[in-house]
Length: 347
Figure 1 (spheres, rainbow, N blue to C red):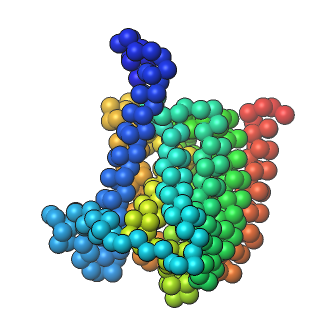
Figure 2 (figure 1 turned 90 degrees about the horizontal axis):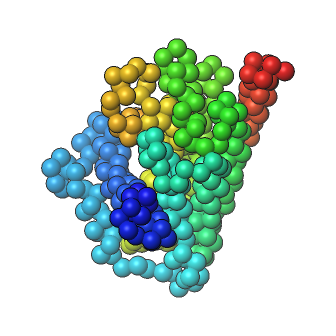
Figure 3 (figure 1 turned 60 degrees about the vertical axis):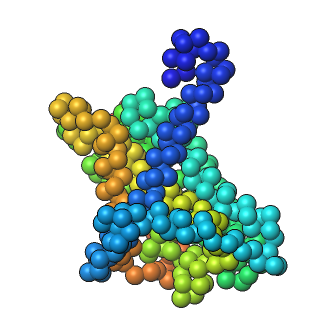
């Protein structure tokens, strides 16, 4: 896009700036619309699991329910507790929402369709996603209320615990793909086993995908790992004192993170924008369509789990992360690196 603007006579600096802004809008605007519709889909899936109807009044089939909810919170008053740290209290939801959007910059939607095709894309996502905990901690501390503060402490322990195992899982993927570039990781999944595209079919990487899926639910604080928002214990968790658009920003950020985790499952283990089979007629379907279909599939799995699996106790959550996922992921780092040294590098 930058070269096209330069060909039209625009200076390179302005051409790069305009192309970057357009690229950001092409990602951010559909993502915001997608978040609104995915909230609707989430509620409909929960309703179907519980034999209820779900949203069905506002708009055809209830499709405008999320927009009505957004208008409702927009018109509400923003209430700030008198004892809260007002500056940090207002910055926290903005930080959470901004960080949720930044990770999408390096995600490949198709071959060449990526905002920032950097060599360390996976490290960038790790670095940005780890900043999300600050929005939660700042919200819990600045509210000057005990339940949000307890929730913030839970969130910090939970996210740090599962980021450790996620890091080892990603090391396994990087070792096998031999690159940190997300586009390169997708291309490395071509005909992984016979004509199937995706690392999930690999016997050494399949357990890593299962652990990554579960760790992603814990990292995004989705049920059954939503201990930070356990209403029977913490009212509404770190969001207890929030109202109006500040509360809406947390909701948008949470669902944007869930969609990002679904996209990472698709990109790292299920071939990303590649079709499921390395069969030439399937490549006529645009890559972004395949990626979107895989994201929707994983979102259905996330909603299915939330509607059917009871909430963990906090000690069970910590035990799963530290006593099961961490040693298992570390073991597979050793197994995969050893296998590659024997086969790929001939050591």
